[in-house]
Length: 459
Image (cartoon, helix red, strand yellow):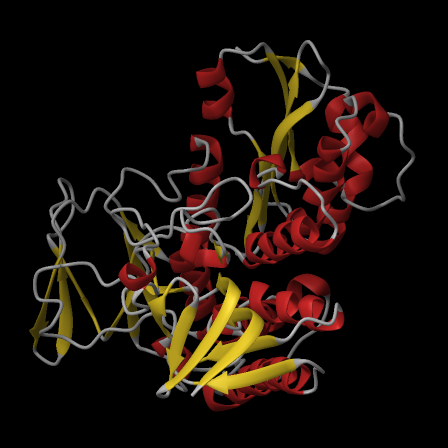
């Protein structure tokens, strides 16, 4: 039996449910297909559960610093990971349930649970049933990459997904990968009480960031007792006396570190390998990401790819923006493009890093004349009041147009404050608009005009 719909949405990550709801509300008949948990990575193993865990870790950290704030807790601060996990599961589960219930409650929408595979550019098979539509939207997300490390199949290891099931504090957690996911888990578990070692193949952490940002983040983590091993050029895994030995080639330190648990945090892989894309003629790149144009259309007319599987962004907010672009273009005859958006994201360590636009390296490569201002968080009143003075604010401005080119805010509230700059960038307004604005004291945002008053040529 073959069922016809106006649109088929494969996957219920950040873009899929909103797109389905928009279409259904417009009177279109929609089929939404989900093979696993509703809500995708963000809801189940990404943003929501990890930030819930980070919040618990932050509370533990502040409690241990009680004497600095003028209070004392009787005895040691003890972490009950079973309760921490239960809190995380409750928050995440509520979101998962909400996504499913909202989809099932949509008029004009049929929810199908099962694994979708293309039969042709217009037909998808699920549980033996053929679904047909003139428009198909792929929103299948990604999963943790498992690199071909020597010994990888000889030892147990964790990923960002499987670590969600951990209800104990590992004695010594070794994290392979010194980028965003790895560093968030490193600080989190160190605060829970684990010994933590981060092993990174590159010469520094989060190498896409400017060197001063990278070094500042490293310093923040090392102050908390996290060991950082860089330039680990040949990583291997083996069991040794009931532990996991992580081997590496480092010039100045022992060639191995022994841990009780290993977390792989070395990137993501798109979930496109088992969709039957070849039957639809949909093109992918060498890494498996679906190739899309500036409006997220694939090479096959009538098929779009949204979210992590298209390689045009690896964040929940880029996925949601994908939905907005596609929906507005199809339903409002708009002309929105991926290239119109400004790169922005955050590293949710404590303090967080808020980033938008170009880095120092990007600007120098472009050859454009620029101004820069850098201001330590130790001179920001709000940071001093909170006792969280680590980090800095750095802003770049085009010397000719006076428009903001990019910024890095590493410090308390940085993940929120960065949006002030981002909105000015989208408005294509001069930085003087922000510089002359009156902000509330004593917020972190209030210091942005002060920072901009200190612009000087980028040497």
